[in-house]
Length: 188
Image (cartoon, rainbow, N blue to C red; front, side, top):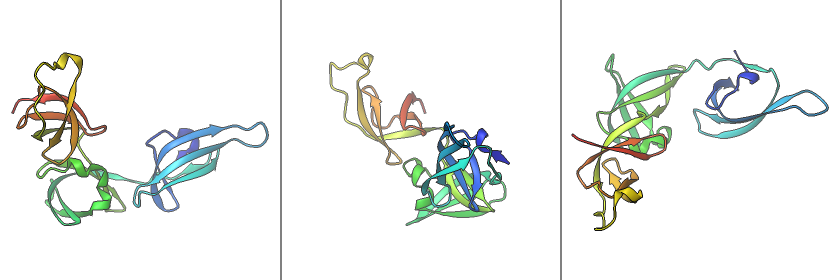
């Protein structure tokens, strides 16, 4: 059981028979009456964000979520196919379930799928990915990387990131998938 006093950003609870993630919370202790907690919750199945208020000390069951490593295989229009690395079972997810990682989908890459009641509900990209730069304008002569100047680059997955001027097309870069920022150039 998870109490409202244990709420943290990212905490997961079972509320109204569905898994929810706490996006934001505020403990309020009015001068009169009992304390309460105002929260912003995201339904992990539908993606809908709700604002809810709970009494302080109220308890919620753990949603019993499971994480499984799966390899991305291919997509058929709106359906994306993943394969379990242990038993080779294939799982299908809809585009709406993986919209947050769509710009980091790369065939043969391993992703973490989130399961609720033995059903996959979403996927998470690896924290860092090494991707090839497909399109980027050349760095302007006279500009230097010491000034922190950047230019846009389109990666092999279609993601757009800002990279230093010295990065060229065909090179590989390491990207932080949490915020989509360039980390470093990678030799392949």
